[in-house]
Image (cartoon, rainbow, N blue to C red; front, side):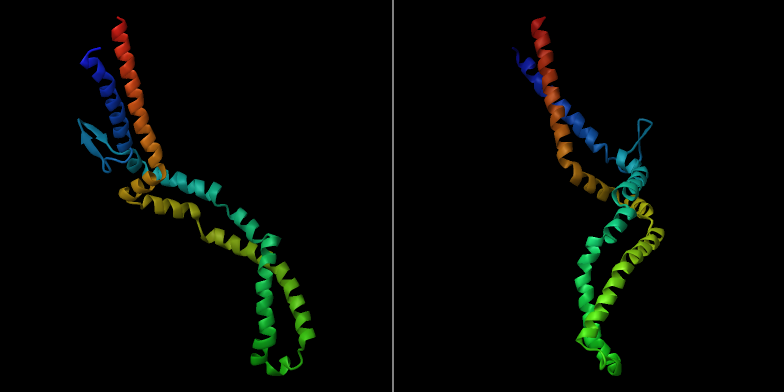
Length: 200
């Protein structure tokens, strides 16, 4: 085997790695459109940032963050039951202390038994009121808060540096794997070329 034949797999591996490295770089660069040999070239993500933002906004508003699911969670009986001890503490404090400060005459006629009865009535009423109150609140919030528009606005407003940083942070391992895979495939193709020449 000649020196040139040994170099072929190594050169092929480098070319495979380098072409994949260039392809990954071209996802983000050039950030602004540039004319090269009469062709306008721009990185895929900077060029498609608006479309990417619109699709991401739609995905978040329709699939990832549903107002209906949030409403179901906050109106769930178990979640409301978890709030009741806190509410009961506030009502107890109001009936025993605040009421005495605000309406001393009325508080004189309210003993422990009456406080307990009032608390029981208030808590039962609030347990019925909370789900309806939360449903109405979520309905108003959904009308006022357009999640899709917020996500589109935020992602569209990302600088190219920030967008690249976010995507590199998420996919750095995958990008590295693609680069290495290019080198490995290039090496294997080089070895195959050498074998073909040796068999001739």
